[in-house]
Amino acid sequence: MKKFLLSVGLLVFATGSISAQNCSKYYPMNEGASFQYTSYNKKGKTEGIADYKVTDVSTNGGATQATMNIELKDEKGKEVYNTSYTFSCSDNKVTIDYESLLNEEMMKQMGDMEMEITGTDIEIPNDLNVGESLPDANVTMTMNMAGMKMKTVVNQINRKVESKETMTTAAGSFDCYVVYSESQMETMGMGGTYPSRLWLAEGAGMIKQETYNKKGDLISSTVLTKFSK
Image 1: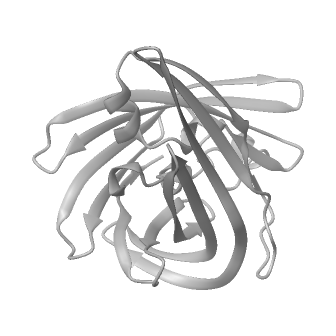
Image 2 (image 1 turned 180 degrees about the vertical axis):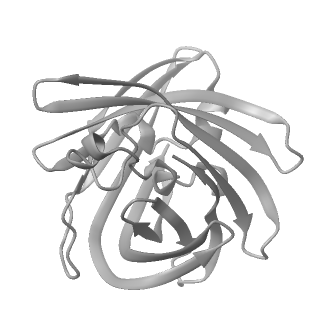
């Protein structure tokens, strides 16, 4: 089940240019921006590294859309997966493609299987306030496996801005909003709920994310280790 945990925190980034900041405070809308995140298990051992880069930005009317490339490496630095997703901003909020709710490791394991994906996009407003509730998001993936259909459902619920804190990592010290959420996943009648916290800084995006089990014990964490506008 651990392999299927969400990595939504990895989708939250900074914005670099003045024109982009008019559209989004927390997401990269400038081509060439790059970020590196290191993932750790509950004992602090490195499990993998993810390199993100904004490869394309376009504007149509009042909306801006960007493409993010992701290169996932294992703990030894070997590339194991490469993909991309899109996100857009308009009306003072950012909307992320719901397919990004699916963990990169899970998608790698699915390979070239025939699948259908539907869902509701993730939204984060530019103006966050402590105590504010954020909209739920979800994705449903149906796969055809040798004539059998297997459905995976992921719901991100109870999203709320908990507090403001200063978070320090190898990339520096940042004033952050702390966003709590719960990820529910079900596959073939089996699943679980995984609470998480996301530290989000204006101008630098996601600084850290922690995922917990139902008892509140830390399962894994992801930390910003490199950042370039």
